[in-house]
Structures are given as C-alpha cells and as structure tokens.
Image 1 (cartoon, rainbow, N blue to C red):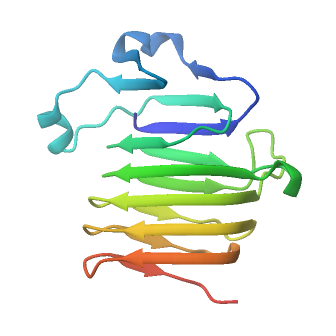
Image 2: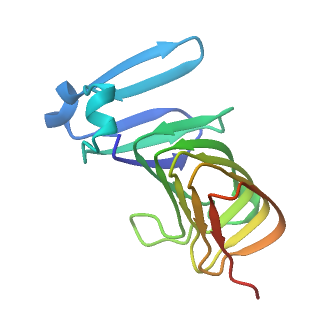
Length: 168
C-alpha cells in the first residue's frame, strides 16, 4: 500500500475506492489481515508503488507491519483516548497527524513502539503529546521531529541512521 491511514476504532473496517478492488489481494494469516498490492518483489525493489488510498479503522492491535508503503496514524482526540501502537516499517514512511479529515484535533498518543529499518522514515507533527515513545532505527532509516511533546523517550539507532530532534 502506498497510502494507508490508520484510525483507532472499536471495530475493524477497511475503506477503499471500489475502482481499485482488483489492484489488491486481501487474506488472513492466523489473526493477521494481509493487504498486498498485486506487484512482484522486483517491482517493489525498482521503486514501483501504487498510490491508492486506503483507510483502516482498527481496534488496538498487536503489531502493524508495513513494507514499501506509507502509513498515516491519527492520534486520539483527548488523553483518555490516546492511541497506542506497535509499528514495524521496512522501506516505508510513517506520518503522525494531529487533525482528522473533518479538522478535529486528534493529537494524543499513549505508547508508540516503532521499529524502522531499510530506509524507513518517521515524521512527527509540530504539536501533540506522546506519553511514551520507543524508536529503533537501522539501515539508513530516519526520524524527524517537528516539536511534538514526548514525555518519555527511548531511541536506539545504528551508525547509518539519523534522528533530527527538536528540544523544548
């Protein structure tokens, strides 16, 4: 998936434009939903992407894994609805956003655990609050902070990766 917005919800639901249904394969693997674009590994390696927007409404899940795609993660609307997620990225981009599609504030995250590898990028917003953030960067991955408030933070990274932090 090139563009996947994840919104925390009570029940799981997938939204996509009906014209693109033939471009994806959906399957379950034990307790996992696997969504794949109908592309080969060679096409992905050459940089081919499908820019089809998909919205996933998910209850808190064990782990979200993304390869060769983009995730937009909305926060909760207040501290009692703060979002907690474990996310693993490979050759992917994660963007935390603080406004939902209707323009309502969604800028609270409770606990985020993010593993970024193989040229993955993480972008944090200029406002909002993360109570606990655990980030691992490896193999040319990067993290960019625009000023989000982080109350507790753990960063692990190798020598090929980078982290641009804004101190307040």
